[in-house]
Image (cartoon, rainbow, N blue to C red; front, side, top):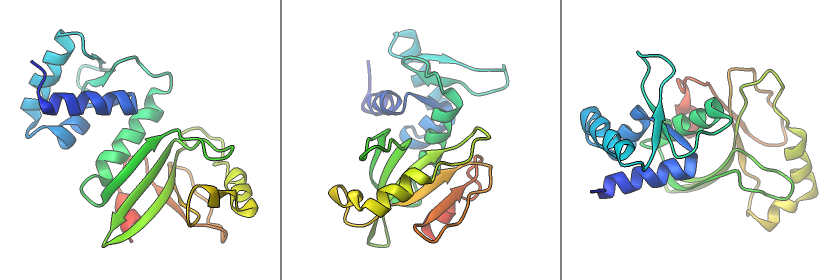
Length: 183
């Protein structure tokens, strides 16, 4: 039998394509043991699949294994890191805004104030493509979608450039500085 928590976990996996045991535990289950048991049951019933790279790593769960596995895992890890820090109004994956397709679009509230942010995961050595965001700002086409230009959250271990046109918040891949989102 699929419980409400299981259904919520399945919906999350479907939306984000992949999630780790610890992420699903944090978001949907009261303890690690309960999460492990319930997720095992979902695997046994064919609802989801799982794998792990090494025997001492935690399982990752998916419906269909994404091509950009590490990329997608960092996005779910980010979601887990901010889940209890802010009020997430909406988090959409790969939304097309004009000609831009960020990895995520986050709308959130903190201390009764609303914010919007593009989310980009940058794990390759290629620098973050800021030109597309600068063009969107310069042409003012963002106004067709948002009342203000969104912040840009860059999840990367690279140096993120600071520019004067819009705010860039760099979050490390280990999420150790995810609190920067609320400062």
